[in-house]
Length: 508
Image (cartoon, rainbow, N blue to C red; front, side, top):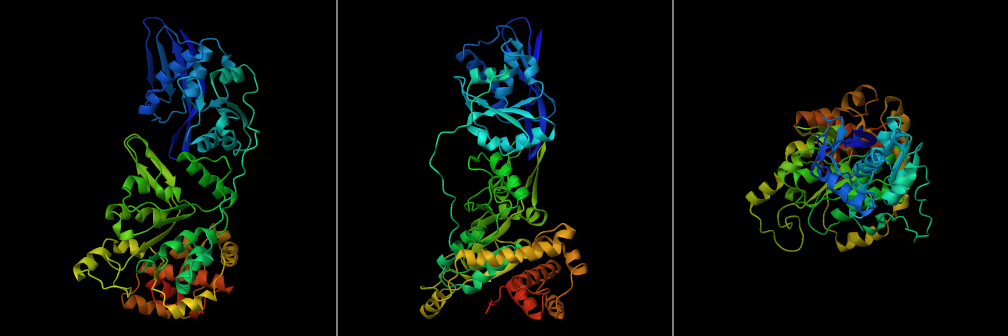
């Protein structure tokens, strides 16, 4: 019996484990068996590899072949094991030295003609390989730019089986693409100045961006809720290097291209209101895959027409809103994905949207309005920091608002300065944003604002929950940071309480 082995990576959530791909050629009737808890796409890998080896004129053994993916108890999914299986078979057939596979991790999907195709999740897989001490990797040539994002790796690219075996015999592999391609201009953020009027809502979202607070925008159709939400990532600062690598790894796992480099700007996800629970928070039969909340990690998750979402899907947001991660447990494995997103929801006042003074008369019954509003539960609304009412613009107000239009750069500069103040104050405790500070630490480690009795009165009247008190304090600190104050005063506290309760308060 001839045995050869190669290495690849199994991803469970964002964590990767090294997988030893063993290929054994025995004696007897022709048969190929793949074992080691493969999923459907991986179970077909033996057929793809056999067809690719035959197309490239290397052939496939006429004896029984056993391919084992070890550890056998770890669930494995995806088509990126093809290259490791083909390399192991090549070593067993004497096409390349077995020693060339000892400390090399291989990733790539094979076509039936022997071509090597890109795979999803390459960036987190390479990070896992580097963490486990592997310094030499072989990847599809089309993904060499993505592979180069991980430092400290000796990367070779291959585009077909002949180039793979050439690399394993000591060849250089396919050189990185140097052909000039059209420069892709970085997408410019949507301009904050495009939204005319709605000064109070603009200020509320500026506070949300400065402290990474969640926001709920409610008002009739056409007042600018979606316009404001789309422009919120544009006024947020760039991601830090660690955040950029983390966000890029998630998007690589989702199959998005990273040819242009790491993702530097906060991402934006806006799933349709017909989205299922699995598409929103993640899911899958064996090893769960990330959903929209992970796609929006370190960015903005916008739920337009929030009451139209499934109540079950909305309730699944409770834990991620508090913990910043999603834990998806399945019988085979438990996947953990990051989900520290900034939630922005938008809703009309009623099903027809005409109950707030827009042109036309509301035709919804009181019961229909009540049912519509109750589709967003109290526990979800209690986790939202800012509740902002948007009203239709009138001509006089519109003319006045045009004189106060601010571009994205001006607002983003204020937000950046407020973020820097937060980092200087909170970095010693391991936090970066006001919204991240636990309530206990907010009350004990930071000075309380003047006029704190105002919150006691709101609690006694049933207008604030215990969580609401903490959120008002966080908002007060963010407002103070935007104002350049060393600590919140009573005016900042009044403004924060107004934002929390949805009152019409804003910056003068």
